Image (cartoon, rainbow, N blue to C red; front, side):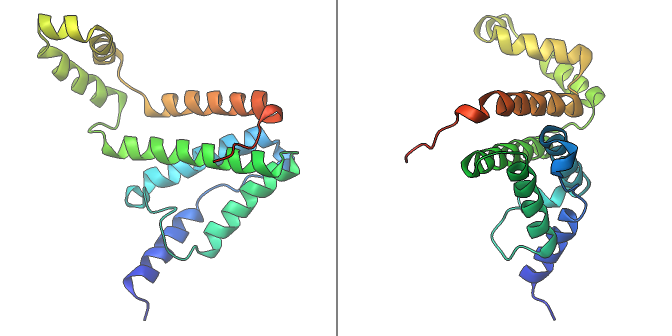
Length: 176
C-alpha cells in the first residue's frame, strides 16, 4: 500500500497529465502559450495542486514527460541550453505565481471582483484618497469593470513571450 507521500505524488502526476505538451512543429511561441494556459487551467481545476506541482518528492512519469517536452520544444526551436533554462524558469514562475495569487484572492469572477472593489471603495476617506491616489484609482475602476483573471493572465503571458522573442539572442550567463 502506498504511503501518503506516494499518493500525493500520484495525484499531482494526474494533474500533469492534463497539461498540453508543447511541440516545436507548432512554433515555440504558440506552443509555450498553449502549455502555459493549459497548466494554469489544470491548476484552476485542481486548486489543491497549486504549490505542489514542483514540490519536493519523486516526479511521476507525466511530470517528467511534460518537462522534457517543454525543454525539447525550446531546444528544437533553436534556443541555446541556457536560454531554454531561462524560458522554462520564467514561464513556470509566472504561471505558478499567477495561479497562487488567483487561489488566494477572495473573488473568482470579474463581477465578484467588482463587488469586492466597490465594498473597499465605499470605506475610503479623504485622507486615504490623498495618501493612496493610484491605489484608489485601481479600486474605483475595478468597482465598475471588475478584474478578469483570464484576460490579465493572457496579457502578461504575451508580454513575457514577446520579451523572450526579442531578448533571447542577447541573453548571457550571469555569474552568481
